[in-house]
Amino acid sequence: MTNRFDVIVMGARCAGSPTAMLLARKGYRVLLVDRATFPSDTVSTHIVHPLGVAALSRWGLLERLAATGCPPIDTYMFDFGVATITGSPGTPEAPVAYCPRRTVLDKLLLDAAAGAGAELREGFTVDRLLIEGERVVGIEGRTMTGKPMAERAAIVVGADGRHSLVARTLEPERYHEKPPLMAAWYAYWSGVPMDGRFETYIRPYCGFGVAPTHEGLTMVIVGWPAAELDRVKKDVEASYLGVIGLVPEFAARLANARRESRFAGAAIPNHFRKPYGAGWALIGDAGYIKDPITGQGILDAFRDAERCVQALDESLGGMRAFDAAMADYQRDRDEQVLPMYEFTCQIAALQPPPPELQQLIEALPGNQMAMDDFVRVNAGTLSPAVFLAPENVGAILAREGQ
Figure 1 (cartoon, one colour):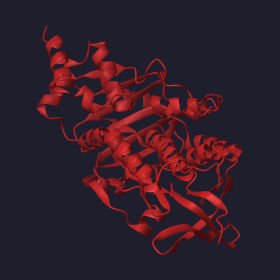
Figure 2 (figure 1 turned 45 degrees about the vertical axis):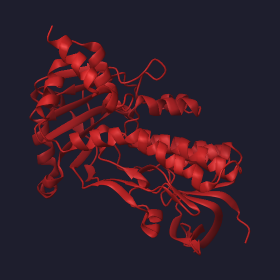
Figure 3 (figure 1 turned 180 degrees about the vertical axis):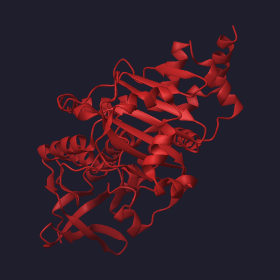
């Protein structure tokens, strides 16, 4: 049977829509499906770090996001109690971040995919993958009205999140696996005084982050060790406000604010999956997921989209064998994100920092270049391996001792 599509992309949010868009721009026949209809919300850290903003610029979508009224963020602040570090998260080419509502960002990306020529089916539930022998050849599912449909493609891309049907069906290898480390809940507040910063407050065994988003709202997210999950769920609001109360200065800013949403959150696992096999690929949270404390999910999804599209283009265009192209995709992905993965898992445990890191943190205030680098590590702009290299740490400590 002839394939109707070159690629079917399952999942139309921050990984799937850019993938469909970029493939369609290259002239491939793409079907993009999602069980949701848009605009719709999803649990998210919201933050698009500067390198993610740079991707939006490359795709011609940054002006569209800016036009939605989402405030740009040019400063990140980290308050550790014993020291406060403030710096710039970006580069001259990509100086700012954004913290958009997913109702806005995901719809913008979806519209861009459709505008590029991808065929879109919202409200479409995929029931199963079509598999012939050991090869994935398509999908079978239902429209919103219950009409059954089946479609075939050379490649099925699972951009369907951490509960990926593609991954659950095919059970690819998992590695670098760690259990959930932090439980986080957030809500939107109006009336919180903000000055365009992304703020993080870290205290022993807990912490919270604050960022301005659409419609004058502020997203406030609070985290606890995953072991506290059952206790927190018994009274999320009391637990949430209890952590904020540990920082009286911010609690005073929130005192006259109004919570405009319910609480949303989860405890997220940490692992990599092999992201490809016969007739299929994984991107975004379906292929690699880590704790949200560093807010890397959207940036990772954008990177995956660009890398995976490059590999699929090489394969579909006959330039390279599928396995060779996708093996490079996996290797490049892992080499890029593994240092941040380990760094994220370390801080997501919400344990007091080891003495060496504590000493480094206390040495940073007053050294703006070093503070900018620390902030850029947390933004994913600078690799932790570079910042935490012994020679760099030694130089920071030596300057602090002068």
